[in-house]
Amino acid sequence: MKYKGYLKIIAILLCSILLYCVREEVVSADSEMLTVRLHSTQSGIPNRGAVYTARNLDGAYRKIMTGDITSTDFLSPEWKQIQSNMLTSTSENTKLDPSIIHLPNGLQFGPGLKHSPQETMLILEAVLRAGGIPMLMDINGTTEGIFFHQPEAEKMGNTFTNAQGNSEAVVNKGITAIMSGSGNFQKLVTITEENQQIELDTDNLDNRLEISVDDQSDAALTDFKRYIVDSASPITFHLKVSKDFNKLGGELLLSSSTNLAISSVKALGDAEVGVTKDEENQAVPNPNYQIALPTLNQDLTLEIIASILPLNIDGTTSGNASLSVSGVDDNQGGVSAKSPVLVLSGINFAMTESKTNKLATGGEYLLGKQIGKNYQLYSAQKGWITVSSLNNIDNSQFTILKGGYKYSIGSLDPVPIPPALNRFNYNVQTNNKLNQSLIQIVGLAKGNEYFLYPIKAIDGHSLDKGLIQFSIFSNFEIGRNKSLVSQNSLNTSQNQNFTINTTIPDFLTGVNEYNVLTEKGIKESPDVSKKVIIPIVLFCIVIFVVAVLLIKFM
Image (cartoon, rainbow, N blue to C red; front, side, top):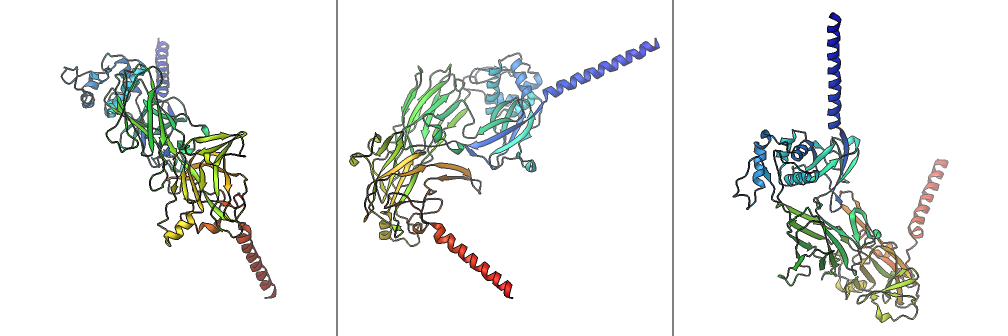
């Protein structure tokens, strides 16, 4: 009997240990920790110094989905606050069950009310947008907000994004709310794997409305989600409206930046939408559009055609164009989205005499690009016209580029290059004379196939009809001051003359640079090695020889 008692005690201990191990395994599985990486941007530009936290909401998710809401949950002040926030004009006069929260779109949750996983996620997002994180944390069971920190090992103490907008954190696996440092809801995600990447753009936090650029080639897409576009060609956007945005229909306000004009808006497919152009201000070249949506039971796509507006009166370029859309969802919450940014690039030329190394005048050119075995020449009236040969063409059918003008692709008439009034030795007559040697082109798409075709020689020289090839490019990077810096074919010359740069009125290094056009019809750069490097090398050799002689005879 004595041994049986010992065996009983041992069996109880073994069962206890087994149960403890099983419990530990369950707990560790439920609280599995994973590293996640967050990339924060604003319209593609990294958000530096942004603070974010992650809060796991698995408990709240399970309770709302199964209806396992207790009296402790629905009698809390946080519950009552969200219940009050969700009241609409139609529900205020109805006697409501204090244990049930009614969303304006008809969804409700509380004790005994079960939901599908999709409905549960919609409820969570609606509550989070209404500022309900305290209530969700209350029914979830308090979990600590985990701060994201910079990914570099030596900077883990910096609980904000780095210069590239990157940060990371070790968080619980499962349903997770990403919150800003000020406590505003940003995004609801499901963490499932190690090193999961989270993309967060503060101009596009809600994917129920999305605008994309749809007719541009991959070559036009540059860094930081910017597109280089041909300002003569209409741009096609697609606005996707999720069926979860507003099942009751609703309205959208579509607007554009001051340099982008919307010409048409239509729905793709069988859906019927009401499109109303704002006609109140006739003087505005880019009025807003009101879009009335039908009842949605599936996603809706709208096609929007827009065009870059020509140069402003003062001759400045019209770049960084975009569309914006906003509306109210079926829970009375505001939703907005912004399109990728469109940028313009171009190139500047300075006519130069190679022998005198001075600015020249009188040259005239056609603008073209080579497409396979054919050529396309530019006409402001007709756009790009395809020709099989450059021999015996009628120059009058195309736009003739002359000195003294800025040409905006898509604009019917060029504008005079504006005077450089900020130049310390500005003289109106000198400025105008020097500008006659300059040609500026803005609004060309990215590419290496462009050329100038000379049709009139620089004054005092014979015509050379060789093609003058050039490239259009635009790249972006984060500068030393952590701001976005553009390097493009307007501010970075591919072939310049350092001697004449100082005589060009509006030349500015890294801002507005010029490529050389000589009387030979080709771009030339002065031989810097002969004029600068060789004298420096000879001087160094002389100093070295003198030093050796002094050491030897001293």
